[in-house]
Amino acid sequence: MSTPNPATAFYAASRSARWIGAALRGTQSIAPGLGMRLALRLFFTPLPLKLTARRRAVPAGWQLSHWPFEQGTVAVYRRADQPAGLPTVLLVHGWAGDALQMRPLGDALAAAGFAPVLLDFPAHGRSAAWRSTLPQFVRALWAASARLGPLHAVVAHSLGALAAGHAAASGLPVKRLALIAPSPPPGLFLHWFSGSFGLGAGLAERMGAAIERREGVPLQQFEPAWLGERLAQPTLLLHDEGDRVAPLAGSRALQQALPDARLATTSGLGHRRVLSDEEGIRLVVEHVRAK
Image (cartoon, rainbow, N blue to C red; front, side):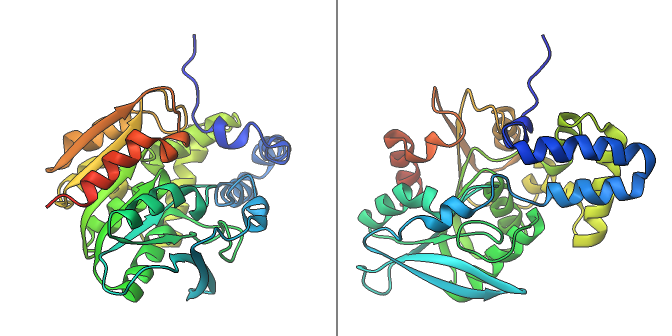
């Protein structure tokens, strides 16, 4: 039996992505350069698109604002009923997610005496743009920190967790991290992406080199070994054993690499339901308020 390809969780369910995949294979065979550019365009586009997230009402007790960021804006949700001066916790989602997925955690942290801030990454939720990259996620975290000041904690899911780890390892002023179902390193996911469309390992390598030229960040910096040498904050890793989008092996590798990390696992929740699980929320709040 072949090992499931986690990238299919993002692309196999999308009719448009399947059509583009067929077009990519044809283009790649006759014009490799154009094929790679089209593959990168798809790789940078969160699917499904953010239209559903934009139609959701702003939850009661939360206020929506928009902050300038690069060539557009990012959407930010903050509690309307909290006094000033509480420790700030920034909560961020993963690829093709949105800030309101983090609301159960945000409400629990507010009840525990923190000031939660939910951020929509570029091209997600109510933020501007239709395409984004992992290094841009990292830059958005730095921009949020510049507005909010030093953070007590960052609670992050999936690709947002990988971005948060990189930002903290690079000096983001934050005391604690809770990384939920962190994504695998981008080099590995590029191979999964290419494999999901039958495009071959060579394209994945060329795409990785192109991303590094465009973003100016070596993808090796998102590997557990690089992060482990630089990320000293106490870190909770929360991961479901049956996660098919971001396999548990990624958190196990991070736990081994990081100097101060604890891994907690759940069962039967998958990649996203872990965000609203009562026990998982309790573990995150407990970690954030630990001395």
